[in-house]
Image (cartoon, rainbow, N blue to C red):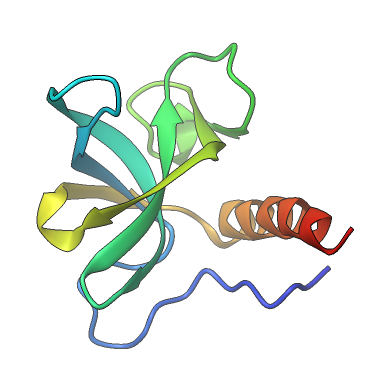
Length: 117
């Protein structure tokens, strides 16, 4: 399935789609800022669109395992997508494999197809 979404970025960027990062995230219900993991979906002009990652395995999403590089088994939450400034990226932890990036792309495409209905 293809809906035109690709998990690639322009050349010369310091972040790549599929990078698992730690980022400073401000929560909507408080002024508190915490460092949280996320996966980069894309970046444009210093704005980085990411999907949050949680270690709460009861959450719905795409599994991310220790064998793939995660500190502990986790879930990529495609229902928690947000934009941060590139300056809010604390560090890059690792890069997702091709298969996992394709799984994310396929799932995002399915969700966006609902807009056509």
